Length: 248
Image (tube, rainbow, N blue to C red; front, top):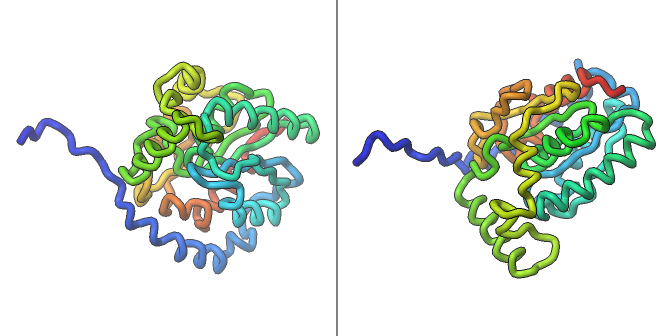
């Protein structure tokens, strides 16, 4: 055995069974009742769901942000499985319309793959984005995830390559269609845009080290990957991050 070869880190998927407990704890928490969280004062927030999830997956977070005084907007996704560049083009159009209507920059909260999209969107359009909050988003290494998730990525890539509409293709990972997207993801983040990245060492899907973007304010939380959208500690950190952004 070659002890010099590091053993790949595989997130403990069983930890995702805690999501229900996290949701129950959230509803019983003072954070859910907006305790200690800055008021939103009508500022716009765009929410982008995670891989294979749709807008409905962030329904609880949407409800809470509205109760805090934010105006929330959906990404318009039934499932986040499209080509990254094509998805980003649609999100940019939506962001332009939201910013124009509000007369101010818009904050973005993105979970998992949604956070990756948020980072690139903010890097391209700092004139439209006040700040982003990413929840368990592997912005440093997109594919640092549990083998079960990687198998789903492979399956969808095969279907997309086979011309099934609305799915990313194998070429999205290494080919020309998303070359600009991959380049922008690795570029320096604009200093005029706030960036808070939440990560959890108890994440059962994503390798938490892949979330440690050097350009972000890193905040460790104790949460499952799915439970990041249902976790009281996460909500508190999201509220404080959004309150710190400069929207003008």
